[in-house]
Amino acid sequence: MDERQFRNERHPRPSHEESVKQQPFIQDSGQTQQRFQPAAYSAQEEYERSTYDSEHSETHRRMSHGHAEEPPSTNKRSKLVKIGAAVLVGLALLYVLPIPLGDMRVTGSDKVTLEDVKVAGNIDEPVNLLKVRTEKLKDRLSKDLRVEEAQISYEFPLTMVVNIVERRAIAVIPSQFGYLTLDKTGQVVASEPAITATNVPIISGVKTGNILLGDTITNPDILAALTYLNALSRDGFKNIAEVNIGDPDNLLAYTVNGLQLRLGNSQDLAKKAELSESMIKDIETRKVNAQYIDVNLTSPYIKAQ
Image 1 (cartoon, rainbow, N blue to C red):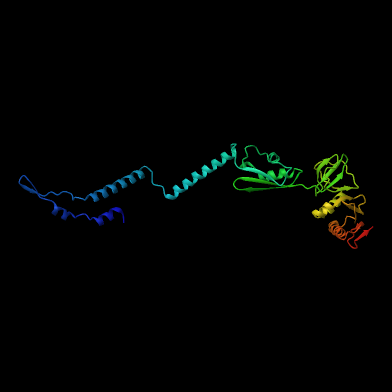
Image 2: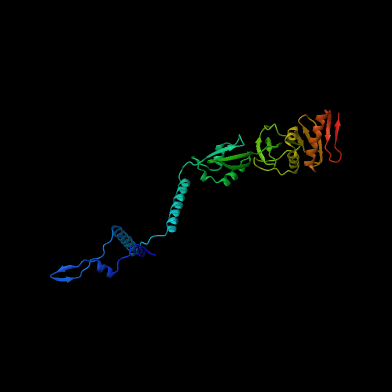
């Protein structure tokens, strides 16, 4: 039911006959003429009529000029598009302009500084985390001989945490021009004219050729010694001062107290490392004055003096 029907039901207009009966007779020149005036409407009815006419007139004007009202869904979609465009423009400005956004922190190392990380990642000042390419940064840091692994995480609100796992020196070997420090994989992480890493064992009985910083050792005897050292626990590693590989079939290790460990050939060196730790602890517990230890997997024994 439209508005006009609703209004007519509430305030029905009088019929033509009723209107005629309600109109007064007017005398004119001696003749009686019947004239009637339109039925009078109340103020409420007049207000409703004017409101209805003005609304329909405005609607007609919009329709005639091609300005039909847009549905609510279209208006909402238009607002979302505008908001999305504004966000994209803001992000683009943050990425292009030198605007500071966030902070960086380095943990896990006292050798690799924040400045080292920025140089590796080509990160300019002021720091903008939107411009930092994390995978490229980790890849560049992994090429640093001091770094074994770089881990990147984030802390609230906007802090990038770069955790450095330092490359651990595991042995020192003599070289043509001094001494080389090796990590667990055999990569040369330092080259010095004299021994500086006194807290790691030396691999003796071999002399390398022209090996440079960053090179990886391929000598099988040196790699065998590294296998033995890598299999030791932290405490067991601290007890070993030297591994001699002069005779590949009769490898020898020496503790920091000078006790000789006869390892035999390069077979099962990981198991021999575990056994040698156990035998050294047994000697310390029993306070045995040992001359050497034969780390034989089938029949190990301790030679007392």
